[in-house]
Length: 89
Image (cartoon, one colour):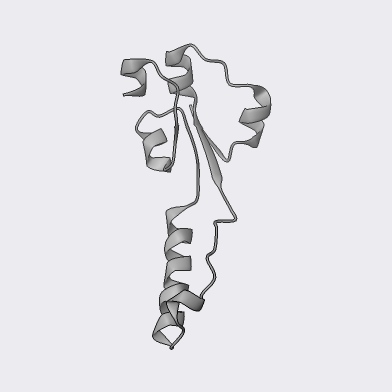
């Protein structure tokens, strides 16, 4: 879709970048599930859901798709490439 409409886009999940999206900065799904399991454990042990703190993700993974960038005629700055956790070539 990104290549069809020639719109660079950032996606919330890593799998979109594997499918041709330009970039994603997201939490890893296994980490999200692990944190959810900790909440479920606390609730099953008697904690009230309303008393549990809301947690935000602390780690993010930046993935860039250079194939898509090239197809869109974009040049990714070297500083962004350096910061990426994964680059699809």
